[in-house]
Length: 331
Image (cartoon, rainbow, N blue to C red; front, side, top):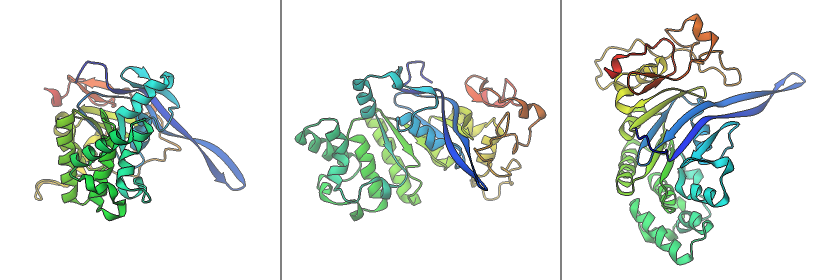
């Protein structure tokens, strides 16, 4: 991993939401810890995968990194500058440089706007002239496999895969350095998914883009990512290079997620470390290690205090007191 200043970084970032719980005639305020003191960094040109069950905080973390949510604690830094204290010009640069692509192209594209207006909107907001915007829109559409003539069409005239290409073109129009892909291919069938993933890889090689790739599909994450972070109930529980994490997962939650994947060999033995139980409510997360209620190797100490992320071997980070300091995954 690069030792240079990260392109985008979260330092001890947290996001808590206040919710109202009805209990008979009473209304009680409770706090949901969607993201809990997360440290994560993205470097130029790399893809960082982010995986975990639904409700673990992946989307909230991605929104924090995009500046769409304000952190309750900690801070988000763009090129070493705290976004909370950044100047207007620095925030403008950040918004140009970090762009999102959301999961559902049917809801993320305004059906009343033509594609040219959709892709060109961030350029117009940024002050580009009409002629400059038109040229960049045409270039962005061609880069994703569409044509300049598509600017006059509406989103409903495209297939689902083409709509997601429009969403990618909109992100590319501002010449970003990082794109946050929040389940960007999960709504596509497998053939269209493969085409979009290959498109994203080609764009990364051509433009030097960095990606935060949020997904449930672990095979897709491995194909796309150089590093992978595993998230559970608002915390990062393991962070490693893609090869290290998939070949030798250390945290019991990571092993359970990988065991739940379809095997390459249908005759392979059934894994013994399958995930059991339900994800605890974020309204009342377990004390200590959040995973101890479902963990097959938990001990009493796991309930007492939350473990810190520790370096295992040369570079693998694991939040588990039961994993030894020296592990076979880095031998």
